[in-house]
Image (cartoon, rainbow, N blue to C red):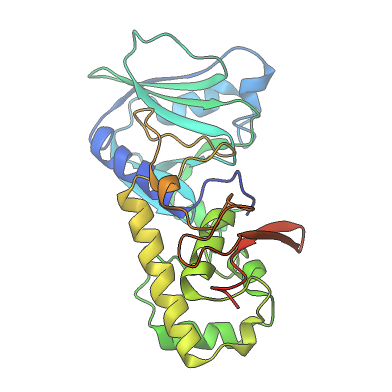
Length: 285
């Protein structure tokens, strides 16, 4: 999961926004904007009409999440699924608001208001599918640990780590092991736990595991309270177009060459398995 990809806290911020703003609303119409670019956002549907007919008249019953994919359950046994990639944005707007550039999908509601999907580079995807078939669809089977939902104990977490033998940064970025940490949170978690990015995951002490588990949970929930992290790479905004604020709390990510806020040593940056890792060589010795 690269730097620009939206991570778990940002996706959960949007899920909560959707729960507040669109659950209980009925879809009046769905528009796939003219041009071939917009069709690239619905690759699982061969025609605009197919996508539109599955949505029109349906009532949104629940806003859920499958990993980093947003799932709006409908009263017609289908679900509207958003995978936002690295550049897609979801905005709740008025029907009278001017359409921004790169708006590809517009969903209108019977009592007013719209949900708009914007994507500069078309890295996202949206589709409608039967709820009972979602997990069987390509890209939808997600058996990784979801730290915002799971009641996983640190002991089980330790057993999971023992089964792996990879550098810690690489493991935390592995979407088959844990959902949606991304570059930002993986670096911040390792700093908080006092672990280097290249520390082998199979060589952690029980104290290391406890500290890592506690830090992981604390940082993700703190980021959620701050409405996510908005970096120049992700440019994350919530459903109302507002940026998050957790970037103001970052200790190491993006701060190479600056002084560590804890020990005043210089923050360094190294590549590991084709991704950059930011760390303090003193606090993460």
